[in-house]
Image (cartoon, rainbow, N blue to C red):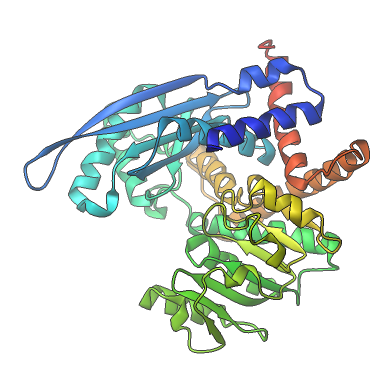
Length: 421
């Protein structure tokens, strides 16, 4: 099953669970607009290379299209459509005034110089300039893109307009109308979701054990904030392996080791395990998969011991694995990615609001705003999940089902009020 096929199946199931008409699925199963562009770049060796790029605008019933731009040699238009659809639902569930969009350029940025990357980024911004804007479509970083790339793009767009337009791209450097919270907002939000769940179902978050799969940006800051809120981080992992210590890791030391040596396995304490997936299986109250998709599968779901999962990554748990997890008597819930890792897009929304006003909040106040939105959305989703379980005793209803139902319902109501349906 491709990612688009999976998204369509989730959408269809959500429409059915919510009791909405078939026309809702028909409307949301297709994007509003697809733009394909070519981006010519003169490479450092004198060759002219022509790159292929996309911008998909899925639905804007709730507000401007919103979604990241990824640079990757294997991106496809089909995947971009699926990702844009996912952004419509993620933004809807987050309760922010955005629709969904997504962009991509087929390239390998790891093989490009900074000059080539800048030319590509400015070329892409020019190519999509006519269909984006602070009130139309607001891109952000995604896989292999970052604040520097957003800075080049916002500069190029502003040159075309003849004046500064900070609100057209989000996740910019703090020195260029960005917000310092953005660097850790996704990991922070994942912890806020896990904390809310632990307070509801585990008697609190402080003192609970947490295992984190991955140790990139999201995972590092998930570990950092879990530790700050009083949980005990017992395992982290990257491609070099897993570090496990039931007494708790020194998270800041682990971050320093990872960032200085490139391998978390060089952490000087605890047990070293060569299997990078071992962090999925250790004894822990809460598991946060924060690396890549499809790491908890039908083949290994029975090895997972955690009672609660908070998905910091996109799609780390397959549908088959989820069915196995929910069949366990001691398993509570998997807080789905659409809810748990929404801290990044919520931060993008707050940055956009700052840019529109030319007024900026302090870092602590920004965190408090993200936390308040995350906590409210967790509460709404948990309540809807309980209601759905009562209504549909004929099937296993997951927290993911409840999240998608809430997301689809909000988009449906907006479309209905606007007279689209």
